[in-house]
Image 1 (cartoon, rainbow, N blue to C red):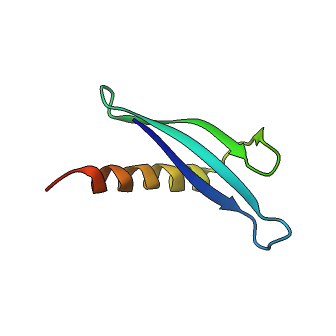
Image 2 (image 1 turned 60 degrees about the horizontal axis):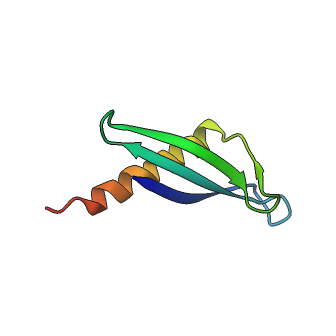
Length: 70
């Protein structure tokens, strides 16, 4: 299952970076893999910080929880 989210890095408009993160949930392993993270302004790959990785994975978990019918 593929998920996409956007993470923002920076403290002001001048240094803000928008990062598109592509994640895949592997049901057989019950694992979330970050496949790519791209700076949308330059279209170049970018390394995520631990906080950014955590934010992307939290988003995927939230989306999965919303998709589970109760």
